[in-house]
Length: 44
Figure 1 (tube, rainbow, N blue to C red):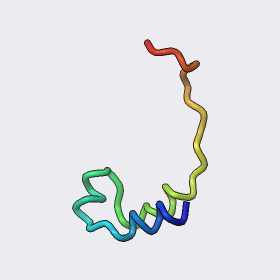
Figure 2 (cartoon, helix red, strand yellow):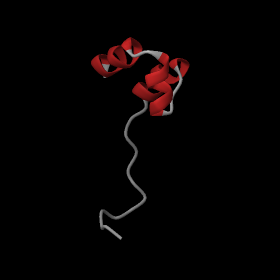
Figure 3 (spheres, helix red, strand yellow):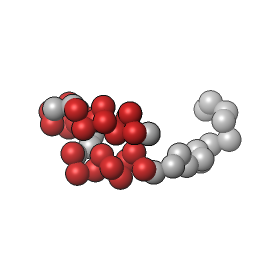
Figure 4 (tube, rainbow, N blue to C red):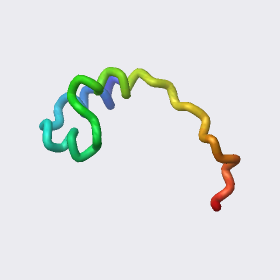
């Protein structure tokens, strides 16, 4: 998690925008645990 957070903080703002997040959201997105998908694993 720390390395992912550091990598995102090192990115310029335009790259973060391309990813759909703002600099202020980095800590939030890197602290959220993965949530199970609503699918059962089957491709539709």
